Image (cartoon, rainbow, N blue to C red; front, side, top):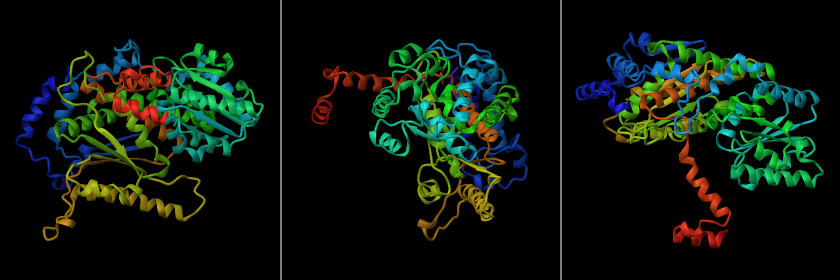
Length: 501
């Protein structure tokens, strides 16, 4: 059942004809709103008091989720049913966060290898070479938890632009650098072209492939053909989508950096959130509540974008990661049956780290004609091992700025005499906070966003686990690289390529 066919959709739309959804500055001063619109789980606090909806609409949205049978869909997914129908696959990334994983052959191979790397200390640098889900997830976690990294320096290469490789070569010694070639299909053009350059660089420096390179892939056969021996190949299940793969062997660079104990805390944070997602009733289920806000803003208030602003520099890569997560998962135009959607799915996801964002696009958020719902993310405490006393004070300013922007967006400031200084307010935001950045809390936060994305897909009745939309451009590029398909190109494309390539 699509969102348009959900009986509660009509009920909400009928109410919207008579409701004023631009009275946020009045709503947020209702004391009862704190109990109804704030949620807590573990150290996580989610405040949606500044969203443009009242209790009646919130209750309707909860009923909408019930009519969509969202709880049974979650249960079916976690039971291993093949809900990815277009590829006839189950969705298995949840299993990688469970304690049972530590008994698997995949885990033992991974942990034994990383222990060798960390204990021998022969590798001073680790370079992850991948793109999309093979890069964004590990890169984001590396940035988020870099204060916990005790192993070798970790670098990431994704773009086929050779300048990035040159910069890494200048920083690394070929004899003490491990390259992790990460490609689920082991057919990704950008990754394999970069791997060729790395192989040549190693060869020029008398370092053999299997002494300095490992492969993370679903295609052992292709990796072997490329030159990797079996002991240097780490498997990814076909049932784990790239954007959900940082929990798999794709996260080798995370494990090498964090070490086993911290990595297990990271997994545990994610598993705890999964349990909440699977077991908590809809009324207090944080991922489902936030997915209902996606639907409310996207489909009922017609707001086609969603901004994510983390007020901690360590999460500067989270907006880019969330952009791929949500837009690749839910950027669909047909439902699970292949029927055209009657109501659009997936907002445009964008954002930047605060407070930097306040000095760039917050002008648009406050006074632009279009309204953008905003997630404001902030740890309530600075890192524990801060060496300088003024860090605590700076962190206090960070938290104050996060709350102040949420308040200013909601309340605004009326200036009828000078339109340039008029702030209309009524701009919705959600504050998501946690105690401090550590492996457990970051694992929980990442799982939260994954589960918001999945729950939203269930409400739209789309398949959030395939990504056919990324294939056409890649296949066209592969044809051109192999001197094929030129006759299928437009005249301007042929002219451009003939002059440039």
